[in-house]
Length: 463
Image (tube, rainbow, N blue to C red; front, side):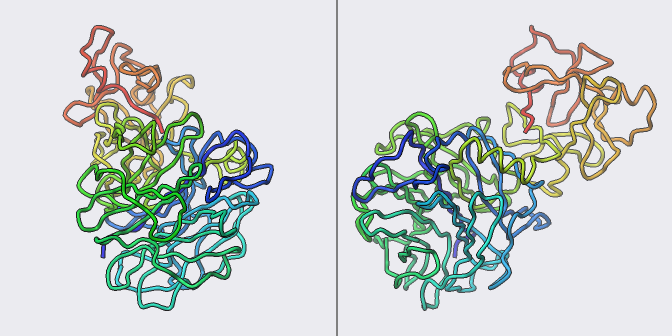
């Protein structure tokens, strides 16, 4: 079986709700659902290469733009299963017709995938600030897995469809229907083409249902569509997509603003980049443009999750309830899958993921020599700071000398390569900037006349 299952979902932003056309997905009728979505929340579980950062529980992150994410609750769980395997993968968040939320997840803990399970985990939530009514629902009586749930409203049935990955002799998508996410109809095969499939994400836009899935036979992602959303009614209309060495768990999401769409895919291996993304102005076409990793930053260690559009009030409520992280990461501008980390007391950039993952976490504190500037304190080695020594950047304990405080202080300015990013000028050598060279950090003289590559080396996203 393939590795981790993940399914992303989203809520299409509508300026007002009208009566749905036949088969269209509605957002609901509560005041929260009626308000325009201006931000996004991301639910996921976590894995790292050596398993030290694994967490098979529900985590949340938020983003105003749906591209750059900040974990909530210090990237600790907000809900953990207490039955079945007592772990989850592939959490899926759906806003129901009444504007509240339901969370579905695979009942599976860890990385052993030959354990068949007939159940899904389920929680109810009015606002994703609390989770109640925890239960498991039995989807079938077959000797097969129940992976990567997605759900959507089917107006013609006045019910929700729950679609998930299973096996009936080959890998197919199955579906059950429900009104309350407590009792479900008998399972049925939902999508079974001439090849093995996995990980559907289904979005209704107007009267058309779009389903993106993984073709297991060739490892690519495809889009299919249907005018009814009924079982076995989909026709594939796109060519195959992949970024990186491998990909699965496609997510299709309509932007909160404008008519654009994004498609996400999970690398499914915790030793590779977690996510890749595409954009398109026409979901019904066959034209997806790969986004530069410079344009997006997934939540730290996030795997196989789901995205939902939320209102400004809901965003503020989530931040108030769970809190934004007390640490930041520094992402390289010209190597956007690389992050600043310490290793053997030296500072460098390395491609993420890596372990210990905490080596890339920094407390951005008032400058030790000038409170108007900044200093970088290590999260996993508190009291140790990035400082320059003979122009090389090291992680050293603060000895509280004036020289150390000056060496560890940097003035944050607009990015030399991109003003929406950041650059950091040395406090005591103000013609020199923090930059990477051969992946190692140092301070070097830079100016407006410096080469484009030098300016890029000195530009970072604080996320």
